[in-house]
Length: 89
Image (tube, rainbow, N blue to C red; front, top):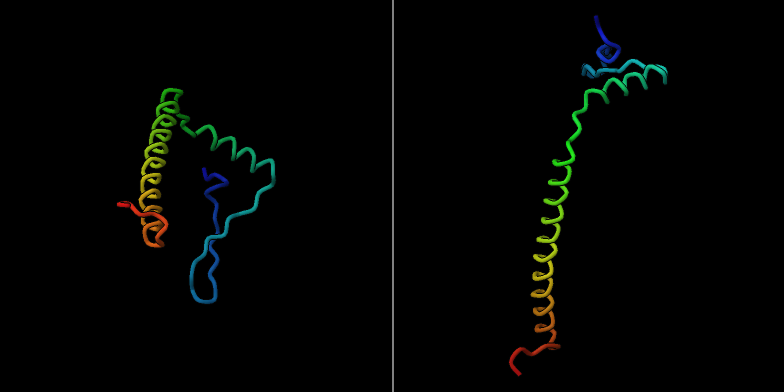
């Protein structure tokens, strides 16, 4: 048995390319398909969500520290170039 999602017709364009054209459905069928697809989703557990959030936070903090030091070095270099900062006197 074919599902409505699998029914795709092929339409040949002038240059010979086969472009798949999806069949139009009404809103009720569309939402039924959406619900069917949502049931297939594997949702992460609370532990996986928590660990992923902590890892993202750690990476953001490390990135923030890295760019702070890079910005500080570039700022000092710019100040040295324009003569607004003299490191030795």
